Image 1 (cartoon, one colour):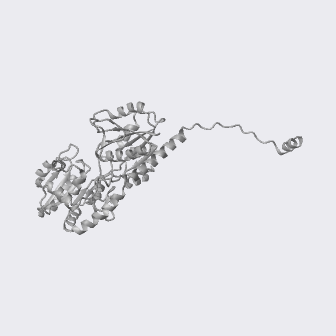
Image 2: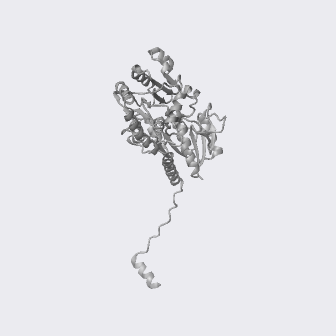
Image 3: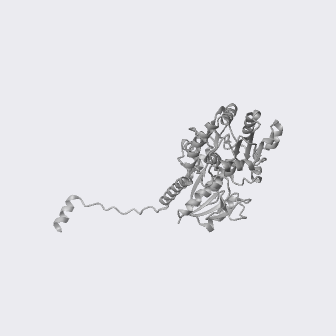
Length: 412
Protein backbone atom coordinates (compact mmCIF):
# COMPACT_ATOMS: atom_id res chain seq x y z
CA UNK A 1 0.00 0.00 0.00
CA UNK A 2 1.41 3.38 -1.04
CA UNK A 3 1.79 5.82 1.87
CA UNK A 4 1.39 9.52 1.10
CA UNK A 5 2.11 12.36 3.51
CA UNK A 6 0.00 15.34 2.40
CA UNK A 7 0.91 18.89 3.43
CA UNK A 8 -1.96 21.32 2.88
CA UNK A 9 -4.96 22.79 4.75
CA UNK A 10 -6.67 19.47 5.46
CA UNK A 11 -9.58 19.78 7.87
CA UNK A 12 -10.20 23.43 6.96
CA UNK A 13 -12.78 24.90 4.51
CA UNK A 14 -10.17 26.95 2.61
CA UNK A 15 -9.68 26.44 -1.11
CA UNK A 16 -6.58 24.33 -0.51
CA UNK A 17 -8.32 22.46 2.30
CA UNK A 18 -11.26 21.56 0.09
CA UNK A 19 -9.01 20.39 -2.74
CA UNK A 20 -6.83 18.35 -0.38
CA UNK A 21 -9.68 16.71 1.52
CA UNK A 22 -11.89 15.97 -1.47
CA UNK A 23 -8.99 14.36 -3.35
CA UNK A 24 -7.50 12.57 -0.34
CA UNK A 25 -10.82 11.05 0.76
CA UNK A 26 -11.11 9.51 -2.69
CA UNK A 27 -7.49 8.33 -2.73
CA UNK A 28 -8.09 6.71 0.66
CA UNK A 29 -11.08 4.83 -0.73
CA UNK A 30 -8.92 3.67 -3.63
CA UNK A 31 -6.44 2.00 -1.29
CA UNK A 32 -3.81 4.68 -0.64
CA UNK A 33 -2.60 5.13 2.93
CA UNK A 34 -3.07 8.87 3.59
CA UNK A 35 -1.49 10.90 6.39
CA UNK A 36 -1.96 14.68 6.45
CA UNK A 37 -0.17 17.61 8.07
CA UNK A 38 -2.37 20.71 8.05
CA UNK A 39 -0.92 24.21 8.15
CA UNK A 40 -3.90 25.87 9.84
CA UNK A 41 -5.80 23.08 11.60
CA UNK A 42 -5.54 23.52 15.40
CA UNK A 43 -6.15 19.88 16.32
CA UNK A 44 -8.70 20.71 19.05
CA UNK A 45 -11.45 18.61 17.45
CA UNK A 46 -11.22 15.65 15.06
CA UNK A 47 -10.57 16.87 11.51
CA UNK A 48 -13.76 17.10 9.44
CA UNK A 49 -15.02 17.92 5.96
CA UNK A 50 -18.59 19.21 5.61
CA UNK A 51 -19.44 17.82 9.03
CA UNK A 52 -18.06 14.32 8.44
CA UNK A 53 -14.93 13.01 10.12
CA UNK A 54 -12.01 12.59 7.75
CA UNK A 55 -10.98 8.95 7.25
CA UNK A 56 -7.29 9.66 7.83
CA UNK A 57 -5.06 11.13 10.49
CA UNK A 58 -4.39 14.89 10.39
CA UNK A 59 -1.50 16.47 12.32
CA UNK A 60 -1.74 20.10 13.39
CA UNK A 61 1.03 22.41 12.20
CA UNK A 62 -0.67 25.63 13.34
CA UNK A 63 1.61 27.94 15.27
CA UNK A 64 4.65 25.71 14.78
CA UNK A 65 7.74 25.74 12.62
CA UNK A 66 5.85 23.62 10.16
CA UNK A 67 8.77 22.68 7.90
CA UNK A 68 10.65 21.25 10.89
CA UNK A 69 7.53 19.39 12.01
CA UNK A 70 7.13 17.82 8.58
CA UNK A 71 10.71 16.52 8.79
CA UNK A 72 9.92 15.01 12.21
CA UNK A 73 6.81 13.28 10.82
CA UNK A 74 8.70 11.45 8.10
CA UNK A 75 10.35 9.02 10.52
CA UNK A 76 7.20 7.61 12.17
CA UNK A 77 4.98 7.88 9.06
CA UNK A 78 7.55 6.39 6.65
CA UNK A 79 5.82 7.72 3.52
CA UNK A 80 6.59 6.68 -0.02
CA UNK A 81 5.68 10.17 -1.19
CA UNK A 82 5.15 13.72 0.04
CA UNK A 83 2.37 15.62 -1.71
CA UNK A 84 2.14 19.38 -1.13
CA UNK A 85 -1.07 21.18 -2.13
CA UNK A 86 -0.27 24.84 -1.60
CA UNK A 87 1.37 27.94 -3.08
CA UNK A 88 4.82 27.52 -4.62
CA UNK A 89 6.76 29.03 -1.65
CA UNK A 90 5.40 26.25 0.57
CA UNK A 91 6.59 23.68 -1.97
CA UNK A 92 9.99 25.42 -1.87
CA UNK A 93 10.24 25.10 1.91
CA UNK A 94 9.46 21.39 1.81
CA UNK A 95 11.81 20.77 -1.09
CA UNK A 96 14.68 22.57 0.67
CA UNK A 97 14.09 20.81 4.02
CA UNK A 98 16.75 18.33 5.21
CA UNK A 99 15.06 15.32 3.65
CA UNK A 100 16.83 12.53 1.78
CA UNK A 101 14.98 12.91 -1.51
CA UNK A 102 16.56 9.75 -2.88
CA UNK A 103 14.17 7.90 -0.55
CA UNK A 104 10.92 9.78 -1.17
CA UNK A 105 8.98 10.99 -4.19
CA UNK A 106 7.46 14.47 -4.16
CA UNK A 107 4.37 15.73 -5.99
CA UNK A 108 3.28 19.38 -5.95
CA UNK A 109 -0.17 20.79 -6.73
CA UNK A 110 -0.08 24.57 -6.94
CA UNK A 111 -1.91 27.48 -8.59
CA UNK A 112 -0.50 29.97 -11.06
CA UNK A 113 -1.52 33.51 -10.11
CA UNK A 114 -0.43 35.38 -13.19
CA UNK A 115 2.44 35.32 -15.64
CA UNK A 116 5.35 35.35 -16.20
CA UNK A 117 6.12 32.72 -13.57
CA UNK A 118 8.90 33.40 -11.08
CA UNK A 119 11.96 31.56 -12.53
CA UNK A 120 12.78 29.84 -9.24
CA UNK A 121 9.31 28.28 -9.17
CA UNK A 122 9.77 27.02 -12.73
CA UNK A 123 12.98 25.28 -11.65
CA UNK A 124 11.26 23.95 -8.54
CA UNK A 125 8.39 22.26 -10.36
CA UNK A 126 10.81 20.91 -12.94
CA UNK A 127 12.70 19.15 -10.13
CA UNK A 128 9.66 17.30 -8.73
CA UNK A 129 8.60 13.75 -9.50
CA UNK A 130 5.16 15.03 -10.46
CA UNK A 131 3.54 18.46 -10.70
CA UNK A 132 0.04 19.81 -11.31
CA UNK A 133 -1.73 23.16 -11.44
CA UNK A 134 -5.36 23.83 -10.60
CA UNK A 135 -6.19 25.67 -13.83
CA UNK A 136 -5.62 25.16 -17.51
CA UNK A 137 -4.10 28.63 -17.47
CA UNK A 138 -1.49 27.38 -14.99
CA UNK A 139 -0.76 24.23 -16.98
CA UNK A 140 -0.17 26.20 -20.16
CA UNK A 141 1.94 28.83 -18.35
CA UNK A 142 4.30 26.18 -16.97
CA UNK A 143 4.47 24.32 -20.27
CA UNK A 144 5.33 27.57 -22.03
CA UNK A 145 8.13 27.97 -19.47
CA UNK A 146 9.42 24.50 -20.39
CA UNK A 147 7.93 22.40 -17.57
CA UNK A 148 5.23 19.90 -18.65
CA UNK A 149 2.74 19.61 -15.79
CA UNK A 150 -0.81 18.24 -15.52
CA UNK A 151 -4.22 19.66 -14.61
CA UNK A 152 -5.99 19.13 -11.28
CA UNK A 153 -9.16 21.14 -11.88
CA UNK A 154 -11.11 21.51 -8.63
CA UNK A 155 -14.56 19.99 -8.56
CA UNK A 156 -17.87 20.96 -7.03
CA UNK A 157 -19.82 18.63 -4.77
CA UNK A 158 -23.45 18.81 -6.02
CA UNK A 159 -24.63 17.42 -2.70
CA UNK A 160 -23.20 20.48 -0.95
CA UNK A 161 -23.71 23.22 -3.57
CA UNK A 162 -27.09 23.17 -5.31
CA UNK A 163 -29.88 25.67 -6.07
CA UNK A 164 -32.56 26.64 -3.57
CA UNK A 165 -36.23 26.18 -4.30
CA UNK A 166 -38.18 29.45 -4.63
CA UNK A 167 -39.68 29.03 -1.16
CA UNK A 168 -36.32 28.17 0.38
CA UNK A 169 -34.66 31.14 -1.30
CA UNK A 170 -37.40 33.47 -0.02
CA UNK A 171 -36.87 32.14 3.52
CA UNK A 172 -33.08 32.60 3.25
CA UNK A 173 -33.45 36.19 2.09
CA UNK A 174 -36.00 36.90 4.79
CA UNK A 175 -33.47 35.79 7.41
CA UNK A 176 -31.06 38.36 6.00
CA UNK A 177 -33.72 41.05 6.38
CA UNK A 178 -33.60 41.99 2.71
CA UNK A 179 -36.31 44.32 1.39
CA UNK A 180 -38.84 42.65 -0.91
CA UNK A 181 -37.44 42.58 -4.44
CA UNK A 182 -33.94 43.54 -3.29
CA UNK A 183 -31.01 42.86 -5.61
CA UNK A 184 -28.22 41.15 -3.66
CA UNK A 185 -24.72 41.20 -5.07
CA UNK A 186 -22.23 38.90 -3.38
CA UNK A 187 -18.51 38.13 -3.14
CA UNK A 188 -17.18 35.02 -1.40
CA UNK A 189 -13.43 35.50 -1.01
CA UNK A 190 -10.67 36.21 1.45
CA UNK A 191 -10.04 39.84 2.32
CA UNK A 192 -6.58 39.95 0.78
CA UNK A 193 -4.58 42.14 -1.53
CA UNK A 194 -4.87 40.20 -4.77
CA UNK A 195 -8.67 40.35 -4.64
CA UNK A 196 -9.73 43.65 -6.17
CA UNK A 197 -12.06 44.36 -3.24
CA UNK A 198 -11.69 48.12 -3.42
CA UNK A 199 -12.58 48.05 -7.14
CA UNK A 200 -15.60 45.80 -6.49
CA UNK A 201 -16.82 48.13 -3.73
CA UNK A 202 -16.35 51.19 -5.92
CA UNK A 203 -18.23 49.52 -8.79
CA UNK A 204 -21.06 48.38 -6.53
CA UNK A 205 -21.65 51.81 -5.03
CA UNK A 206 -21.57 53.44 -8.48
CA UNK A 207 -24.06 50.81 -9.71
CA UNK A 208 -26.29 51.17 -6.63
CA UNK A 209 -26.47 54.97 -6.57
CA UNK A 210 -29.97 54.95 -8.15
CA UNK A 211 -31.05 51.55 -6.76
CA UNK A 212 -32.17 51.80 -3.14
CA UNK A 213 -32.96 48.05 -3.15
CA UNK A 214 -29.35 47.02 -3.92
CA UNK A 215 -27.31 45.29 -1.22
CA UNK A 216 -23.85 43.68 -1.18
CA UNK A 217 -22.95 40.53 0.82
CA UNK A 218 -19.20 40.31 1.38
CA UNK A 219 -18.59 36.74 2.57
CA UNK A 220 -15.31 37.63 4.29
CA UNK A 221 -13.89 39.36 7.34
CA UNK A 222 -14.54 43.13 7.27
CA UNK A 223 -11.00 43.92 8.46
CA UNK A 224 -7.85 42.04 7.49
CA UNK A 225 -4.13 42.82 7.89
CA UNK A 226 -3.65 41.22 4.46
CA UNK A 227 -6.35 43.35 2.83
CA UNK A 228 -8.65 46.22 3.70
CA UNK A 229 -10.45 47.76 6.63
CA UNK A 230 -13.71 47.84 4.67
CA UNK A 231 -15.84 49.90 7.11
CA UNK A 232 -13.08 52.52 7.33
CA UNK A 233 -12.71 52.50 3.54
CA UNK A 234 -16.44 53.19 3.17
CA UNK A 235 -16.30 56.05 5.65
CA UNK A 236 -13.25 57.51 3.93
CA UNK A 237 -14.86 57.46 0.47
CA UNK A 238 -18.38 58.37 1.49
CA UNK A 239 -19.91 54.98 0.64
CA UNK A 240 -23.04 53.90 2.51
CA UNK A 241 -21.81 50.96 4.58
CA UNK A 242 -25.38 50.19 5.71
CA UNK A 243 -25.85 48.53 2.32
CA UNK A 244 -23.16 45.98 3.14
CA UNK A 245 -23.56 42.61 4.85
CA UNK A 246 -20.62 40.50 5.98
CA UNK A 247 -20.20 36.78 6.58
CA UNK A 248 -20.65 37.23 10.32
CA UNK A 249 -23.95 39.06 9.74
CA UNK A 250 -25.24 36.22 7.58
CA UNK A 251 -24.13 33.57 10.06
CA UNK A 252 -25.79 35.41 12.95
CA UNK A 253 -28.97 35.35 10.85
CA UNK A 254 -28.72 31.55 10.69
CA UNK A 255 -27.05 31.13 7.28
CA UNK A 256 -24.28 28.86 8.55
CA UNK A 257 -23.74 27.04 5.25
CA UNK A 258 -21.84 28.74 2.45
CA UNK A 259 -24.35 27.23 0.03
CA UNK A 260 -27.20 29.14 1.70
CA UNK A 261 -25.29 32.38 1.44
CA UNK A 262 -24.71 31.78 -2.29
CA UNK A 263 -28.41 31.00 -2.75
CA UNK A 264 -29.33 34.38 -1.25
CA UNK A 265 -27.45 36.18 -4.05
CA UNK A 266 -28.75 37.43 -7.38
CA UNK A 267 -25.22 37.57 -8.76
CA UNK A 268 -21.72 36.85 -7.49
CA UNK A 269 -18.38 38.40 -8.41
CA UNK A 270 -14.78 37.73 -7.54
CA UNK A 271 -12.73 40.25 -9.47
CA UNK A 272 -9.05 39.61 -8.74
CA UNK A 273 -5.87 41.24 -9.95
CA UNK A 274 -4.76 37.60 -10.53
CA UNK A 275 -6.46 34.34 -9.69
CA UNK A 276 -5.20 30.77 -9.50
CA UNK A 277 -8.65 29.27 -10.00
CA UNK A 278 -11.48 30.84 -8.01
CA UNK A 279 -13.36 27.93 -6.48
CA UNK A 280 -16.16 30.21 -5.14
CA UNK A 281 -16.97 31.18 -8.73
CA UNK A 282 -17.78 27.56 -9.61
CA UNK A 283 -19.54 26.89 -6.29
CA UNK A 284 -21.88 29.85 -6.78
CA UNK A 285 -22.55 28.71 -10.35
CA UNK A 286 -23.48 25.23 -9.08
CA UNK A 287 -26.05 26.96 -6.85
CA UNK A 288 -27.62 28.60 -9.90
CA UNK A 289 -26.04 32.03 -9.39
CA UNK A 290 -24.29 34.01 -12.14
CA UNK A 291 -20.58 34.55 -11.43
CA UNK A 292 -18.38 37.37 -12.71
CA UNK A 293 -14.60 37.25 -13.10
CA UNK A 294 -11.79 39.22 -14.69
CA UNK A 295 -10.72 38.27 -18.21
CA UNK A 296 -7.28 37.15 -17.01
CA UNK A 297 -5.73 34.02 -15.51
CA UNK A 298 -8.37 31.34 -14.90
CA UNK A 299 -11.39 33.65 -15.32
CA UNK A 300 -12.12 32.76 -18.98
CA UNK A 301 -12.03 28.99 -18.41
CA UNK A 302 -14.61 29.27 -15.62
CA UNK A 303 -17.09 31.94 -16.74
CA UNK A 304 -16.20 32.20 -20.44
CA UNK A 305 -18.38 31.05 -23.36
CA UNK A 306 -21.50 32.55 -21.80
CA UNK A 307 -21.29 30.52 -18.57
CA UNK A 308 -20.92 33.74 -16.58
CA UNK A 309 -19.76 37.29 -17.11
CA UNK A 310 -16.18 38.18 -18.08
CA UNK A 311 -15.13 41.69 -17.10
CA UNK A 312 -12.63 43.34 -19.41
CA UNK A 313 -9.14 44.09 -18.11
CA UNK A 314 -7.72 47.50 -18.97
CA UNK A 315 -4.69 47.73 -21.23
CA UNK A 316 -2.27 48.11 -18.36
CA UNK A 317 -0.46 45.64 -16.10
CA UNK A 318 2.26 45.90 -13.52
CA UNK A 319 4.47 43.35 -11.74
CA UNK A 320 2.93 42.42 -8.42
CA UNK A 321 4.46 41.34 -5.14
CA UNK A 322 3.72 37.65 -5.73
CA UNK A 323 6.67 36.34 -7.70
CA UNK A 324 6.70 39.36 -9.99
CA UNK A 325 3.70 38.15 -12.04
CA UNK A 326 1.54 40.78 -13.70
CA UNK A 327 -1.40 42.26 -11.82
CA UNK A 328 -4.28 43.27 -14.08
CA UNK A 329 -7.07 45.74 -13.34
CA UNK A 330 -10.76 45.75 -14.28
CA UNK A 331 -12.26 48.18 -16.73
CA UNK A 332 -14.53 49.93 -14.23
CA UNK A 333 -16.98 51.14 -16.89
CA UNK A 334 -17.38 47.56 -18.14
CA UNK A 335 -17.76 46.21 -14.60
CA UNK A 336 -20.49 48.73 -13.74
CA UNK A 337 -22.24 48.12 -17.08
CA UNK A 338 -22.19 44.36 -16.41
CA UNK A 339 -23.80 44.88 -13.00
CA UNK A 340 -26.50 47.03 -14.58
CA UNK A 341 -27.14 44.44 -17.29
CA UNK A 342 -27.58 41.65 -14.75
CA UNK A 343 -29.90 43.88 -12.68
CA UNK A 344 -32.08 44.97 -15.60
CA UNK A 345 -32.19 41.68 -17.53
CA UNK A 346 -33.42 38.95 -15.14
CA UNK A 347 -34.25 36.60 -18.04
CA UNK A 348 -30.73 36.89 -19.46
CA UNK A 349 -29.35 36.44 -15.95
CA UNK A 350 -31.34 33.21 -15.58
CA UNK A 351 -30.11 31.86 -18.93
CA UNK A 352 -26.47 32.60 -18.05
CA UNK A 353 -26.99 31.01 -14.65
CA UNK A 354 -28.38 27.84 -16.22
CA UNK A 355 -25.39 27.48 -18.55
CA UNK A 356 -23.02 28.11 -15.68
CA UNK A 357 -24.73 25.60 -13.42
CA UNK A 358 -24.59 22.88 -16.07
CA UNK A 359 -20.85 23.41 -16.52
CA UNK A 360 -20.07 23.69 -12.81
CA UNK A 361 -21.84 20.43 -11.99
CA UNK A 362 -19.71 18.66 -14.61
CA UNK A 363 -16.55 19.59 -12.69
CA UNK A 364 -16.41 16.64 -10.30
CA UNK A 365 -14.00 15.73 -7.54
CA UNK A 366 -13.82 12.22 -8.96
CA UNK A 367 -12.24 13.67 -12.12
CA UNK A 368 -9.79 15.65 -9.98
CA UNK A 369 -8.87 12.52 -8.01
CA UNK A 370 -8.41 10.55 -11.25
CA UNK A 371 -5.95 13.16 -12.50
CA UNK A 372 -4.02 13.23 -9.21
CA UNK A 373 -3.88 9.44 -9.08
CA UNK A 374 -2.43 9.35 -12.59
CA UNK A 375 0.35 11.75 -11.59
CA UNK A 376 1.04 9.80 -8.37
CA UNK A 377 1.39 6.50 -10.22
CA UNK A 378 3.57 8.04 -12.94
CA UNK A 379 5.82 9.62 -10.28
CA UNK A 380 6.18 6.33 -8.39
CA UNK A 381 6.89 4.40 -11.58
CA UNK A 382 9.57 6.92 -12.55
CA UNK A 383 11.04 6.72 -9.07
CA UNK A 384 11.10 2.89 -9.17
CA UNK A 385 12.86 2.92 -12.53
CA UNK A 386 15.59 5.15 -11.07
CA UNK A 387 16.00 3.05 -7.96
CA UNK A 388 16.32 -0.31 -9.72
CA UNK A 389 19.95 -1.53 -9.77
CA UNK A 390 21.65 -1.45 -13.12
CA UNK A 391 21.83 -4.88 -14.77
CA UNK A 392 25.16 -6.73 -14.33
CA UNK A 393 26.85 -6.97 -17.72
CA UNK A 394 27.27 -10.56 -18.91
CA UNK A 395 30.45 -11.65 -20.73
CA UNK A 396 29.96 -11.87 -24.45
CA UNK A 397 31.32 -15.10 -25.95
CA UNK A 398 31.96 -14.68 -29.63
CA UNK A 399 30.96 -17.63 -31.84
CA UNK A 400 33.86 -19.53 -33.45
CA UNK A 401 34.73 -18.60 -37.03
CA UNK A 402 32.95 -20.56 -39.80
CA UNK A 403 35.87 -22.89 -40.49
CA UNK A 404 36.18 -23.83 -36.84
CA UNK A 405 32.38 -24.41 -36.60
CA UNK A 406 32.64 -26.85 -39.57
CA UNK A 407 35.49 -28.74 -37.86
CA UNK A 408 33.47 -28.98 -34.64
CA UNK A 409 30.43 -30.26 -36.55
CA UNK A 410 32.52 -32.91 -38.33
CA UNK A 411 34.15 -33.91 -35.01
CA UNK A 412 30.70 -34.26 -33.50
